[in-house]
Length: 96
Image 1 (spheres, rainbow, N blue to C red):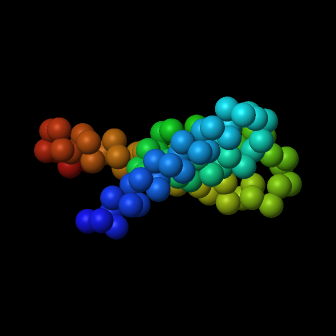
Image 2: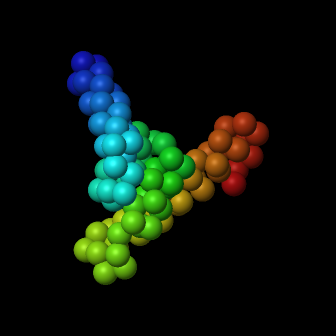
């Protein structure tokens, strides 16, 4: 339980730190990438998707992280679909 609490505090601190970095310089790509990953790990897939999309807009097409970021974007989209299906199932009891 204590480990979970420390992890939650660490996640919140990371998210705040990345948001502050973006606030200080919104043209830097890496904080968007890091924030997207942190949000995805926290289960906030829609918010993560937006941060990763923004990251992809800021980096060149031949950037080394381009492929990884695109994969993470696809994962967010896939998890959002599953999240909607699960919510519908829990709300109605009908299988997707």
